[in-house]
Image (cartoon, rainbow, N blue to C red; front, side, top):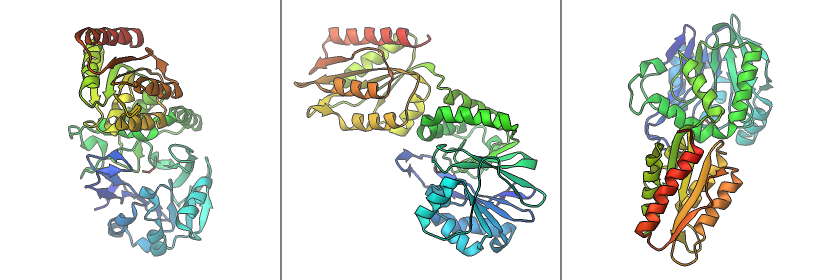
Length: 395
Ligand code: FEO
């Protein structure tokens, strides 16, 4: 069934109930690909869905209007979870125009090699549909170069593409319909931000300035994943805090271990963090998914990274996590390395190199033990945990 946002504007997307891996991101609750249909003199479809969900989307459209009556398609974003359905949809609908950003035209052309009737739009471009007007807002690198948002001016609805999205498959379509749904929705919104948008905080703050300058206000924010916000104030405020890299007095101990020596240190550090009154969490990298750890990294003020030395290098899961973390450009955090070794002992140095490359504040030069920590070393690790918490968190 299509779902009405307001009379004449419908959600016609698709629900991906069984999705569990979105290019490496653990989507434990599935996802949706949201597409929207606007009924006006010029009937308009905003975004499509993943290729295999086109029949589901077109069936929803058909419950409102014959898909062949669609005049315009707006493509806010090239990534294939939203554009994968374009070739089939364009072939069926034969739209007069396909609207996209300049980088969108290039990206769609590279993906699909089709001679579609593109019309390139820029920030402030307006398109009259009849009684309603669409205004376009380029949002480059939120989170691809082509990304843009589309605003239904008279009704103050922002079609925000990936912005404000979350991965959740549900029968409900609006945020106010899911007060108690586990896992709680704000957590899914935070996880999405942490894993997709964290590198782009400065651009989000700039977008907020631009929105204020243009005098745009939103009654509804309709993203391309997850629920539609009829009360968008909370999500806009959450994004403002995350974009400003505000942190809590929270410390994460993230590690892997071979024969439990690094794990013994992790436990001692975690105890020390708790001694100091920090909100401490311990994450074993083969038991917590890195996309879940990143949700916690987002507002943590202190990270302790632990690895044994394996074959003169890092334990593979630690190397993988550091690569992922570095790509997401964490800001406003202190960090330190720890680990155990048998003979060569490179792990702490290698972690430090990565922390320096991320320009994180070094909380300590690093703590390592040979083979198995003795009681004095565990006591020292616990004391150091408390010390770095006091020195780097607002406790
Ligand atoms: Fe939901 Fe960037 O695609």
